[in-house]
Image (cartoon, rainbow, N blue to C red; front, side):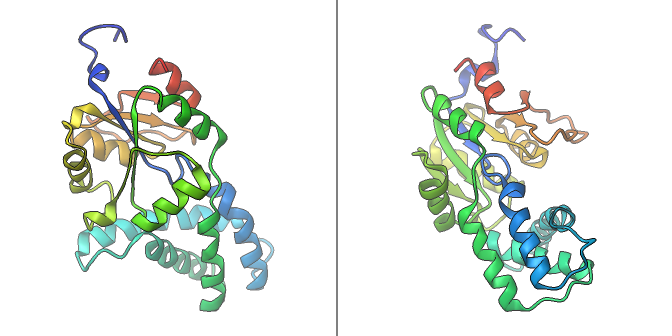
Amino acid sequence: MNENSPTNPLERVRTLTFDIFGTVLNLAGSLVPPLEELLRSCNAPESITGADVWSQWRQRQRIEQYQDNLLMLGHSGYLAVKKRALLYSLRTFKIEFTYEQIDKFMKVYQDLTPFQDAIDGLKRLGTKYDLVILSNGEEWYLKHLAKNRIGIDFHDIISAEMVGQFKPHPSVYRFAAKRMEQEPDQIMMVASHSFDILGARHSGFRGAYVNRYGLPYDESEYRPDLTTGNFDELCLKLEV
């Protein structure tokens, strides 16, 4: 589609909502080195690396979030789910640990490091759009990260905690649109995880898949409007 065409649906977009964990913040780069330290403190076999645990942990985090949504036993919160997923992953590798070691390790989540292309891109995108965090993280935690780790003055910070469901539950996206007093198609979700774009598109949002990990998109009719490898490409496609 010609981006200058009056029929281009992206011309209606006023607000960009962002996933931040893995899209703006470099989770693997921030967590794998401390994971290596944790493994050594637990006397794990040298054949098990931080990258090995991270791969298992990352997949388990998603399962924990889906279970939290499906069982409807009350919203656990992002950090609690991450901790449960880590415990499961360490047990999968038969690694012995103490809860004190885990509590100490989890403090690294306060110091996550952003991708530089994301910081540069957010500054450019903010000259044209309202920028909003739309994340599974707790509200207090998102405010900390925005102020102390990302350093961007977002127009708003919306947490899945406000709804009591994790993305990609449709209620999260619908709540965000209502809170911003915008029609869903005036909002574009930006994420490096296809499930987030899938959930947003299903809820009427536009979607930009920043596929920085080179992963396939879900087999679905709800496709992203844009697919890029990083924020630099996103800015170019949005003519910012």
